[in-house]
Amino acid sequence: MERSILTILELLAEGAPAERLETFAARARGNSDVRSLTVVEEGVRLGRALHERHELRRQREAGLSALVSIALELTSPVDLCSLLGVITRRARLLLRTDLACVGLPGAEGSPSVVRAADGHVSAFTIGLALPTVADIGNAAVTGAIPVWTPDYLHDDRLRHSAELDSAVAAEGVRAALVAPLGRDGSTGALYLADRSPRHFTHEEIFLTGLLGELVGTAVEKVTALERARTELSALDTRYEQSEGKLRTTADLRDLHHRLIGRALDGVAPSALAEAAAARTGGVLRILATDGSVLDATGGASTWGDDESDGPAAAAAHTAGRPVALGEGRWAAPVRARGTGLGTVLLRQNRPVTDTDVQVLAILAEALAVLLLGGGAGPSTAPVQRRDGHLDDLLTGSSRLVEQTGRYLPGPGRPHVVLAALPKTDQLGEAVAWATLHARRTGGLAGERSSLLVLVLPGTDPGRAARAVMDELVPLLDGAVTIAGAGPVTHQAATSAAFEEARQCLDAMIALGATGCAASARDLGFFGALLSGSRDVTTFVHSAIGPVLDYDRQRFTELTKTLEAYFRSGSSPTYAAQELFVHPNTVCRRLARIGSLLGPDWQQPDHRLKIQLALRLHGIRQSLIERRTGERDEGAGRPG
Image 1 (cartoon, one colour):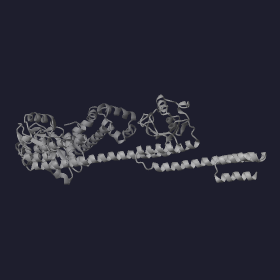
Image 2 (cartoon, one colour):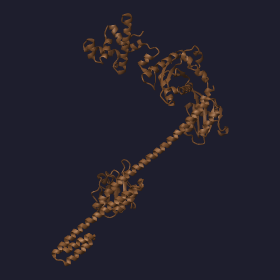
Image 3 (tube, rainbow, N blue to C red):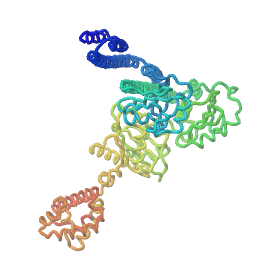
Image 4 (cartoon, rainbow, N blue to C red):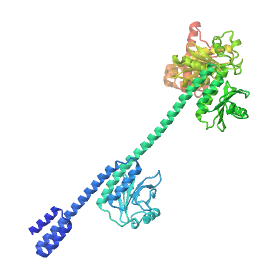
């Protein structure tokens, strides 16, 4: 008996297969007594159990080793397609199945789609949609654990769909094991299938679950990498586009400066056209207002028929901007102060780009400057004569009506005066721009007392100031503050309007409103105080005149009550204590004040105006009493 036990232990120590244990047991049955046979049978049973446990451990170690190898291989692919190919191939070999595929979520609201498959024949093709409601993969993903069936088509535990069942039947699939990808299954599912019924072991299910977690992590990493690569590619494309646009913008800016500079130098129109043609590569033609050809590039033979020039010029001046004429032809109007000075035509054998159109517009602007500066435009005075009369206009010289009447709107036509304060080192650049702007709009511009001054046609100084700021600020590397005054209809009043604009500019700076554009009218009651008339009595009467009149006519003390009310922090109780009256009396007086001043008299803006008027009224009354010893009963009424 001891020898039999020792033999069983030796077999187990040698790692002998289970068949040798069975052979030893069969031999013992013929040579041993009953007691020894019982011991041998029990020893063989225990040995068989140890052998099975050892085999399971060996299989688990082999499976884990394979998982480590798969994990290392999953780090190599850099795109999703190659990664999914590795996954399906290694998963099918690991579980020794006939088929393996990976289903990934589709677009939002759409079912999962088979993105890769290994071992497929016909039905499990890439792109197969997997129904969300009835899919066995949906059960795995929802529960975040592996799900398996020994025979899918005959398993009533699962909800089936006709589409998936027909695909499974066509492929001949019977057993299936599905594992979610990642820890929560949101990444997708791994499908393993056999064409014969199969009961998957716990070890196989365990390995498949671990493989699903590894695959989910790898898919998320590669997906994030592809997304980052796509975003980076888009950023590269946008960068290249932006860089190209910046280069084009810089080229156009240089061209603009060069053409305007040459126009101011008085070069021939052909020189400007040649410079623009070198940039566009097309043929340019310059027309006068009567349609005659002033100049052209490339010669007349390259242009062709002249019959369409007239309609082209008419279309451009009607639109007031460059217009397309078809067949690679464009036209741009040459205009200044609303008057047509000519037309520029462009013809190209290739499609006209936005850059070509901008070059055409720049050429038209340069030609306008050239024609104005050279006296070709109607009612155009030389630059030095036109801008040289600004000082006469602002100082009220007796010569201004005679000499500046040609450069401003006629008698009775309104104009506004703007005073602008740019940075000191940018004043020259601002004056240069303003000079061109004034000539374009029919006004005057120049420098006076370190300020940029513009006299422009118009009736709204605030709007004119904001319009100038919108054009001037982008040209200057810094903020500019602009104040407007007017309108005035007589040139002799321009000097007073300039003083008003300068005072408004000082007030804006004192208020910290630098970098803004406004007029005295925009400043509200401060504008009234800063305006040319500065009639304090009118301002006081406009704010509290009805209350003053009521006190004078009925010998009441509404004004005194209003002052006490504001001094007490708008408290009727404290105001009553100061006036030695009952709070109800104060409330009745405040109700009367509201009926006189309107229901919004306690709104913040209105309150401030009323308090300022009360203060001015009080100061005026104290000064009058100090001088005469009597109260001015008519205070607060306009003269």
